[in-house]
Amino acid sequence: PAFPPKSPGGPRPRPPRSSVDAPSVPTIDSVIEPSSCSALSWRSPCLRRRSSSMLSIQLALLLLASAVQFCSGGYVPPTKYLIVSNARNGTIGYVKLSRTGRHGPVRILIDKQLVHPQGIAVDQKRQLLLIADSELKKVVSYGLLVREDGSLGVDEQTPVAEDVEARWVTVDGLGNVYLTDEEQGKVFKISAQQMLDGDTEATPAHAEAGPGDSSGFGAAEGGAVSAPGGVATDNFHVFWTNKEQGETVGTVMKALQVPGRASGGGGGRSNASASPQLQSPRALAKNLPKAYGLCLALDSLFFTGPDKRVYAVKTTTPSSGDEGVVTVVASDLETPRGCAWDGESTVFVADRSADGGFAISA
Image (cartoon, rainbow, N blue to C red):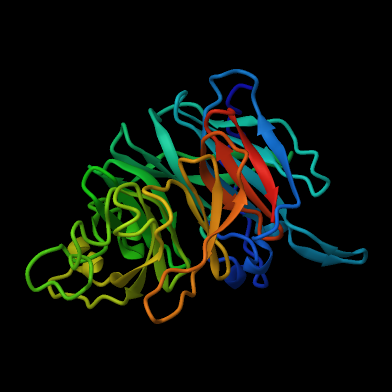
């Protein structure tokens, strides 16, 4: 379908957030209860295009908070939208999810100004869609709009980070944005204050590897970051996958967010220095030489590998330094990449070769 025009008189105001829902969903890159991630009960396609041009790379989920309400008939669940990127066509699409499993058609959300969009994330609190475009060398944002007919729209494109070859992006509850640059081998950040100020200069979220480095990022050969891929955050930690040296450095990594200290002088760089810094990295899994997408559970992570499988590992590994127990939750996909959680009992996985996304009940 053609990109829907904006409503007369400009975009509609963003719906107010419910005071009940606001603190409970700090990020959108969250996944399912870990106790059930070891059993695969069913797998079904949730969106698919027969055309080979529908190249699903990444998924994110929008939870329409204003739809959460109590009425005379009881609790009314929130409206949910699954958002998917098509790197080949440079477009972003979405599908409205149904509790019956009969989802609506895939609709186009964005069909201009993007070249190779891959990583996407939703800032639930601020109703923003974040997109990492490796060809533009930018992370950009769009305000999300919900029209009266239930369709989604966006406002103008706004740059978030520039001069970074980012393919994956995430955001925490405070609005700090984290992105990975595989070529530079770094996890970058844009602080919440930078977002407000319009400062698009991304800075490394961790110390540089080198003599005297006590953060742990330069302790081993290649450090803790080795061609980073998918990234997620739970407001206390940042997690990422490595696409090189996964079996030695770590397939899935975890680092603590430590509040930064502001430097004098004011301005954007001072604000950036006060944003969280990553310290004490450790490997949660070393089961694969590389991994791609990553999405976060309450205390577990789902991640996709090059062997057609989707894995899960707990975020709370033993303090002894040993890696966690990795569980296979799906093994019959083709080229799984990004994933997202619906907030209840379903994990959605984008499959690039299958030109679609799949729902996994775990």
